[in-house]
Length: 136
Image 1 (cartoon, helix red, strand yellow):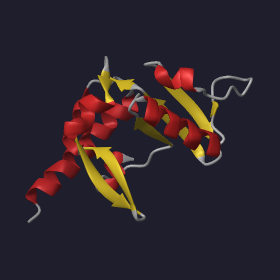
Image 2 (cartoon, helix red, strand yellow):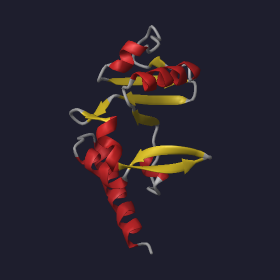
Image 3 (cartoon, helix red, strand yellow):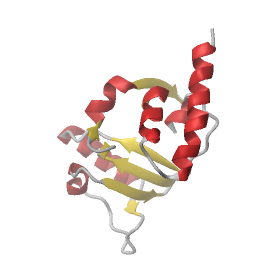
């Protein structure tokens, strides 16, 4: 989603978020996940995430009433929300301010992944970044 919001011609089937694990933010995220009717998508029992899950460092792969949502405490080896702040930018989307990874940082993250879809996206991300740099 960060790539698309910054002009890259990409589609995604899910939204990934990296979140702050502060107590205040965990409470806000828990309220949002409840409103979204989030459940773990790989669990046949339709297990609902709780605050303990959100305090952990793992990835929470969720299904919501609006689609797929990957809730990530960290990315790469152990890069946290706070670590990513310097490499992010704030965009306005439908009147709401949204913090997203910069194209430069997104390219770094994708370059470390081995899935074919991530590798293929690298070319589009780099081309988009090159275009933005050339624009007046």
